[in-house]
Amino acid sequence: MQLRYNFRISPTPGQRTALAQAFGCVRVVYNDALRIREDARKAGLPFVTSAELSKRLTASKKTEPRAWLGEVSSVVLQQSLRDLDIAYKNFFDGLKGKRPRMGAPRFKSRRDNRQTIRFTANAGWKITPGGRLRLPKIGDIPVTWSRSLPSTPSTVTVTKDAAGRYFASFVVETDPAADLDRMPTTADEVGIDLGLTHFAVLSDGRKVSAPKFFRRAERKLRKAQQNLARKTKGSNNRRKAVVKIARAHAHAANARRDFHHKLSTTIVRENQAVYVEDLAVKGLARTRLAKSVHDAGWSAFVSMLEYKTARYGRVFARVDRFFPSSRLCSACGFKDGPKPLNVREWTCQGCGTVHDRDVNAAINIKTEGRKVAAGQAETVNGRGAQVSPGSVPAPRDEAATRRDGQPTAVGILAL
Image 1 (cartoon, rainbow, N blue to C red):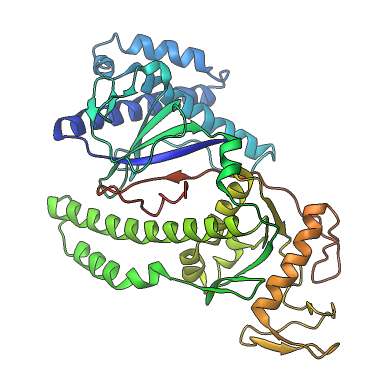
Image 2: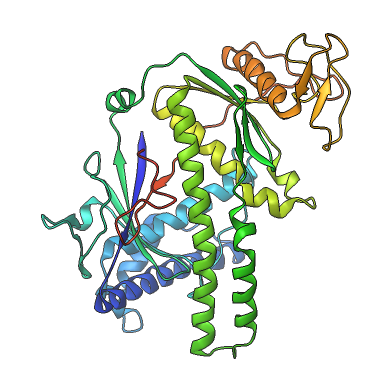
């Protein structure tokens, strides 16, 4: 399995200037290539191939208006063309129904919050014996290492975020046998019911409170936004205020990701099989609960569970969102009617068992999850129609470190 390990880097002022130049060159090459293809489309000409774009890039570096493109590594420029190809492929695959639909490629702006460049193995970058990252035409950049890489990385991506922080992201191959040895052997299984009051309720009765990181940071963000509104547009003070807001948002996001990583790793370590409900997050995000739904970050948490179970040889299954987990009695299987959200306990009319709403739902998710994992699920929706849940590939995530060497919110991947 391929994973990304993300580490904080601390470039010098001169190296930051070189990185800014590289970011700008990558952006210009991307926009030039996109403009060539858009002009060809409007003129009714055939789609311009990647090979043709590469030839034009080589020729443009020999002209006076674009001679400064030769001052940066040619590899990052070629990678920019590959990024454009991927953007077009995703767009066309969305039109064909092979993936969720997304918009056509758009021009990049110098004001984008995130700037990236990518170096492949043939770029000549390396990690020095002193632990620094040596990049062509940029220099040796200090790296805050919190752990050793499991294997030799194939690529490195240097990123600058909205808060002005720099990161180096390494793509590495993990050893499946070593991953299996890291997790203890267990036969336990767990069903998880996700919510807002309690972030997760497990089928064994444990309840994990929702930290609500964004809600806790709202006051600080509100003051930062008010401070920004008082600044003159285009001034240096306004740019500083924007960075302060970005840092506040990054702090909340990092804390949330740290919570997700720690909880998901604990669940995967303790259980051989993990079952969760496939929530309609996009639909819930359009309701009055939108802020709380986004603050919870259910999708990111479930994605972490999915790829970690795949990495460590565990079983993972999603129970269809139409499965009536809150209406079924986990003791006798009697199906009760719908219940408003303020009903947290209810008594089964079939056997008289008193249920905690969330714990009962988690137990039902565990029972149905076993059937889904075995291919025996017969889930029906609220109207009685049969539902066939589909499989979703496991995503990847990143690990990171702070400047002081401690793992951040994105640094719990290897725990």
